[in-house]
Length: 323
Image (cartoon, rainbow, N blue to C red):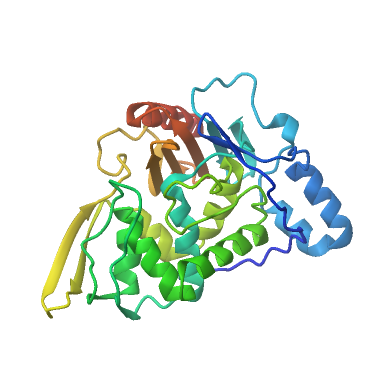
């Protein structure tokens, strides 16, 4: 699949202070550099490259980030027709919020770009996570497992330790990998995003926007390995533990549409995406779908109060793709 290089020419923004509000993170600067005006300015300097980039994206101004006719109780919602590059619904799409495990899309993207799915990893230490109750796999020190198996477990089960394993495999340490994540975000034009870890466990300065997630997700779905993985309703990871015994760990997708726990609207073809849940970020989901005309859509719901509210909001967006 193609790999796009997007040249943004954006300077790093130094964060003097970050404040949380209703699960959102506020930058000390005003987001007046709308994507529409940003691309217009950049095209003057790098017309051919940025023009091609903008033509392949849905863009809108800061003033249009919230549709006055669209009411939502979520932190942010976004629906984009990727075939026509039309923003169909937008609710605070430039608002900075916590992404929870949707973060793992960036970890997956860098793994696909820089890793080899056939490589074997032997864990030389246990992965220790500070957040109580964080979802993890059964992998422990001494286990030998392929990158492919870890990748699937990260995306399907949303195992947080697997994101750390892949970060260390790619960059040598999670800190070095986070630098790569932030650099990649800038490359993709996700300029209101800042990552602090590879899995999305809560950190006050770990944030993104619905629009930035669209940019990152749009890049990830260019890889067959990504789409194939997030479309799976279940999976079994097979590895060898420190004692040389084969271990099989069965898991189900965290996407309840794939498990038929919530019905997919008629006329919607579900591919998949990524969920995210923390006590602060609340319930989040990003999806890729198609309608019966073959049009492709990206839909984002961030900060729904709970799972039922999340799927009500997402279903409402999906129903708009069949009209």
